[in-house]
Image 1 (cartoon, rainbow, N blue to C red):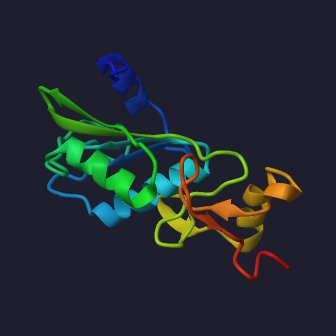
Image 2 (tube, rainbow, N blue to C red):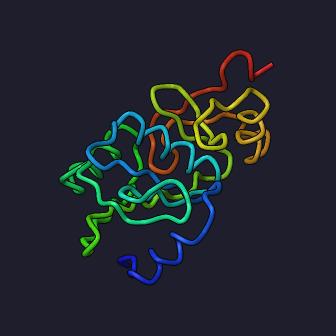
Image 3 (tube, helix red, strand yellow):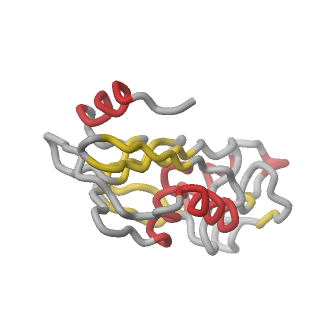
Length: 166
C-alpha cells in the first residue's frame, strides 16, 4: 500500500529512532551505506528510511536525485541482502522523496551485509557486538543457535562466528 502524504507529514514530525531514519541525500546516496542502514533497521525490528528530507527538525522536504530508478535499487537490495525491501517514490511539489520500507528480521536470525552485522547508534551505524548477535541468534532456542545470511528464503546458513559459539 502506498504511503500517503498525510503519513509522510506525520513521520516528519516524529523524532528519528530505531525504526525511522531521515537522510537529506539531495544529489546522491551511496548504495553501500543504504545496504548497511537496511541491515541495521532490520536487526532492530524493521523500519522506514526516508531520503530527500532534512535530518534536523523541523524537517522539510528538500528532494533527492539519489537512486533515480527505484525498481533497480529494490532489485539491487534484494540481490545483495536476499530480502525484498520495497523502495517507494513520491513526487511532491517540494521535491522527490524515496521511502525504503525495511522489514524486520526473523526471530533467531540477524541480517548482515558481506558478513558484517549492524545496528543504529545515534545518528550513525555501529557493528553489533558479540553478546547482541548471540542474543539474536539464541531467540530461536538451542536447536536454532545459528544465524543465517538473509533470513527468510535464504539457502546459506552461517554458523555463529567462532567467538560467539563458545
